[in-house]
Amino acid sequence: MTFDYTSMGFYTFDCLGRPVNELPPGGDTYFIDELTLAVSGAAGSAAIVAAKYGLSVQAVSGVGIDDMGDWVLMKLQSFGVDTENMQPCPGVSTSSSIVTTRPDGARPALHKKGATGAFFVSDDDLDRVIDTRILHVGGVGLMDRMDRGRTTEVMRAAKERGCTTTLDVFASTADELPLVEVLLPYTDYFLPSEEEAAALSGLTDYDNMARFLLDMGAKCVVLTLGAEGALYRHSDGTRFHLPAFDIEVVCTCGCGDCFNAGFATGLHLGLSPEECVRLAQATSAQNAMGLGSQAVVRSLEDTMAFIRETPTKG
Image 1 (cartoon, rainbow, N blue to C red):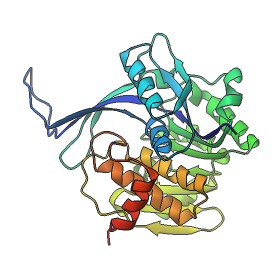
Image 2: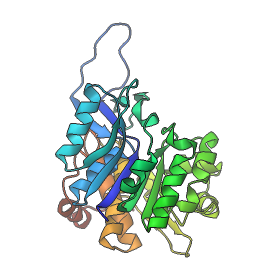
Image 3: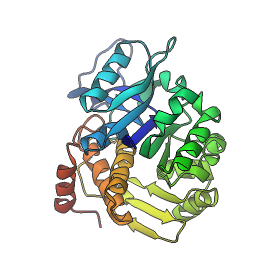
Image 4: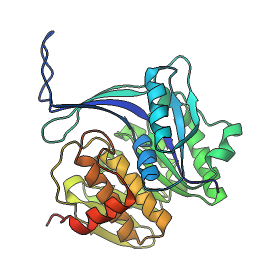
């Protein structure tokens, strides 16, 4: 296969500032300490981190024909990510966010939906999109054209090709359960946050959430629990919980997205389930230590050193 990792879905141009306690009233101006730009999103951050970790990576999504889109493509290419399937989408802007990071790392955002909802994998594109060892789909609920059944067809074709599939969503609500439910039978690893899993399932207990999603067809569910760590539940009976790393949080924007790439890298390397989750957690933790998705994630070697040197909570 041509690619180790294909990341399809939500790519966004982010402008992030911190610390922001509140927006200034009227036409006033508040001064902040940091400002940066980043490619983010459930697929965008994952693509860049996987490339930093040495995987051959393909990006699949859309960008507007605008300055933000030019910057997103430039940034992806600077990390060696293949952008042939990043489609220019006339009539819409590049998906973009203004992220107002709070002192505690929370990141309320203003988002402009755009090209993530406009791209479409045609039959002519399909063979190249699934020419990959691992297919990651990130951002279900934002991919307007793809969410109407095409993502299901792509994931089904990927499984028939022999790909490993991973899936993530975007801030799900109960209304989006039908969009996710049709994908789970073609999903090897579903990687929602606890908030997303709770919204989809209507449940509050982590084990019950995982069982609900496994019963819908996912082969494995990995719940990211923030400061509580991560929960792994596989249909073969493998189950464990790993605590989070004990770090000073700067910004949580992109943490789950970086978790996705760390986990996929572990799969690519043939690591054990526990090692895959630990690598994912370390990737997410490093992301949280700086402003802008992937800012502190440098290389696989650095992340392995982080795992050896950083204590966990509890």
